[in-house]
Image (cartoon, rainbow, N blue to C red; front, side, top):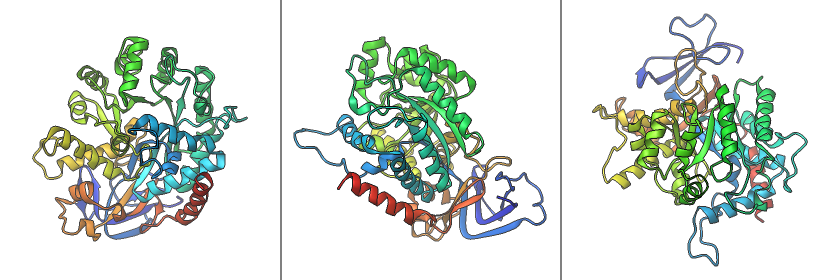
Length: 462
């Protein structure tokens, strides 16, 4: 932006509640202005009939998996049942087939859908690195750059979580379908992340984190090296306790459960995020809480794959943070992820309002879930977004107060109506660093992205 802008919605969400008659001032460098008079010459953008909220943060995404939406929802011939492991084989078909421009096309489609849903930041857990035969590209970060370019062309802020992948598993023979993921050694993995950070540091909307894939995909030695590297303030994300087989393999190799192993190696801490964290013991919950780590729940994927339910209530009580992610892109709607998180717990606990903080307020539970979808996600990615506080990036979205899904809501009930009942189509404007990327529910690249993605889909799945 080259000017100061003042956005004037009917309602502004800040400080944990909606305010009438307040405006959001955004400086020329895309930050929320401090309280006080708006500088002379500022441009005013009126947003009648809108409520304005901090932008949603998608803490865990595999963008290219948008290609397999709707293509795995059946039991393959010869199988008695379908689960994560059979789904994974179907996912490999897409992973094996994509060149750099294909990765860009698939990622861009996923990111457009995120923007239209009010997501302003994505944590992209990126594990597709090499050419189809496993040969590294001349630039080892070719595919990472394709994903970053897609996010920035759409207008999103991105944290590229560079994945480290060393093997198919403990005492498991090499899987040729994973050859695009595998790094030769941990030093190569770390140097690729360092190079990517250097190459993107001129863009304030791009950051980099480390992501050892899982305890089945990396060795203890790899994890020890990552723990050492993480001391320089990298955010570290890792799939943890998503599947019982992962736990069984970890016990066989290390005599420890996954969270116990990570604690032994010094990986747990406020910058660590355990993605999924479905199958946890009480002791592991206590370890994550005591370390002030984050658990990124991805309820739509965990439900889709039959993984199980994240014990978010126990984790919160123990002191852990909870963020949210769209993961496999089975659907892209972070507010729905929030309501699914609570809804799954209601089914498991046989009661309502499981995550309610207990203040007796109508919007207390909704505020906690929104915090998970915004500030907690930003924290897990090492970013300062997620709130509309002075000096923070002006990332926001608006909802249409006259949308049918919100009709009848009062100021007091509006946040709960948005979190628990708003249709994704109620999202109307989305801005990153104060720059509007979605206007009146439309993204300027949506049609072009859709055509390119449709063509790619037909090529891969004729």
